[in-house]
Amino acid sequence: MDYRYGSHTVFQIEYHFVWVTKYRYKVLTGEVAERVRELVRQVCATFEIRIVKGVVSKDDVQTPARHGTNCLYAETGSHTPTNTEIGPLGDLHGDA
Image (cartoon, one colour):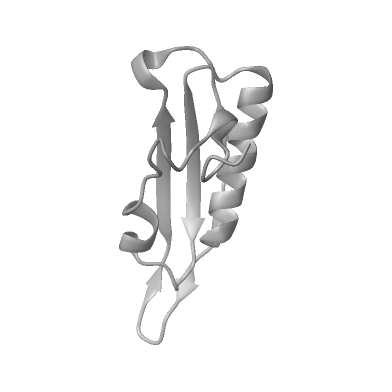
C-alpha cells in the first residue's frame, strides 16, 4: 500500500472518477478515445493525481486514482468544464 504520512496521521486517499457520455452513446473510439485518454492524463498531472488504472470504453471513462497530501476535495471535485470550455475532441477553452 502507498500510505501518506502527516505529522499526526497516516492515510491513503483514493478516488474513482467515472465520466459517461450523454445517453451512453458509444462515441469514445479511435481518435476521440485517444484524445480523452490524453486529456485525463493532463488533468491528473495538473492536480498531481496518480492514475492507478484507467479504462476508456466506448461509452465511459473510468479512472481509479490516488492523490497526495496537498489536495483538498474542493480542488479536484468542484469544477467540471462546461461546453464553452471544451471544444472539438475535448480541447480545453475551445482551442482547435
